[in-house]
Image (cartoon, rainbow over all chains, first blue to last red; front, side, top):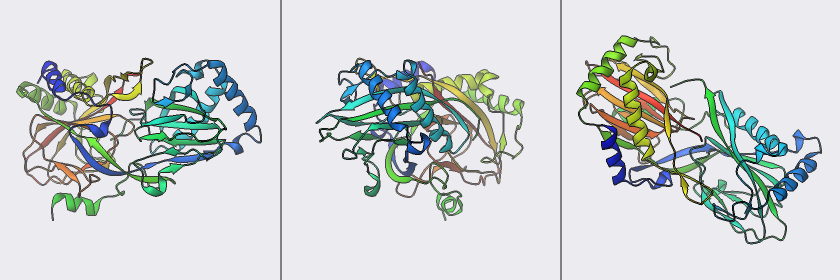
Length: 203
Length: 206
């Protein structure tokens, strides 16, 4: 079969925006790591300075996405690490978590990182970050009232209620979302994705 | 006992994406596309693939941690046109599989292009098997049957719900599946060879 025939075959099954909706999907029961760490201990009491800088950078950047993406809240552009050292720093913290929690020695690189501010009634659609191997969310300001939700997880693991300084790392293919934020206090996050830069081959 | 049940009873490690030492794990049910394409007019391709596998030689002599069979070097697509061609076909199938849900600035879904990260050839003879493993963090993996019979050992996905999922080899069949899925090949018990190609696809990041 040549590429032309393969392209014809592809036309018969329009591309899906989610793997699980593919016409040839098979159901699997699998386990994935979802890891939450608080960054306070890494900054010896100066975490509030980092968070202040992140807040400023997010506000300076402005709302660039205008709720066109899955995030129905104020959101910066995708590549904030190219403009702000503080975003690069958060990316480095998440990178260390990704490396430490991977089953093989793999070199990751930060692909994109952005900021978002949830005001009252803002929310995020359930979505995934596939095909990125790891994704993360860092909580610049969160009172723990609005969760990060993994709707496909077992009931006891479905909701994470993050607080300021928490970093949550998870495989990019896992679906997640944020329900409406019902608090007068802004919920401010930095999120991003890694891709593979180079790695050892394996079977 | 079926081959699948036999495999399930002898597998190590358990059916998880990562190793057991991970501290936080949640079980999730996921629907995973498994794309199978029976390719046509492949006589010449199959002859070339088999020839190239034998010419490349057994690079591991059973030392690979997963596959105990004859196994070539990892980068066959860089040395042999036959492997390069098959890799392009696998990319085309993967690109038809799913878009990224990540959106472009205008809100449309982001199409994804792939390249062959690595590809290799395998020849199973009687007694050979491949232990359960994943190809994470590649995005898609593929396997192509150069020569085998339906009586040969299947490719099995033990963590599929309902007791696992198995695909018996058919010559010229290309199977594309997400790389993080655990899979294995039970012991090959036939007298004839089972000749396969495997490979991994990664994303061309813009």
